[in-house]
Image (cartoon, rainbow, N blue to C red; front, top):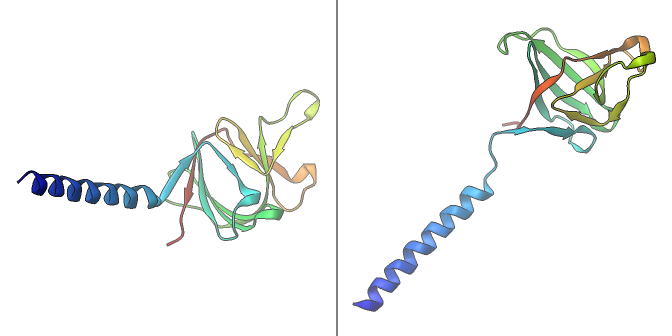
Length: 140
């Protein structure tokens, strides 16, 4: 009688542990993160950047060169036409003397993202609004 109870307990414990391992090993479909190092991602990686007034969808084409396609939305539902850009990195924006310090290859919440629109010339660079959230999406 005692052995049967112990065996049943062991069986239930084993099933519970197996279920826990499966649950921990599975990845969530979308990951919310505070920082993203895009140089280390694979081509085709998709993520969204959120600010107070915009959502920016990013499809990474060539991570090592920062080449990506972006689409912008004001409501998070309707996005504009895709535009090719060069992702540079996290910045606080222009400081005194018109300098913009950029942490290359990194996107961070609480900071802006500096982008090159057609090339890397300073007149063709823009900043997003301050980012409040980053979501990395898995391709299905």
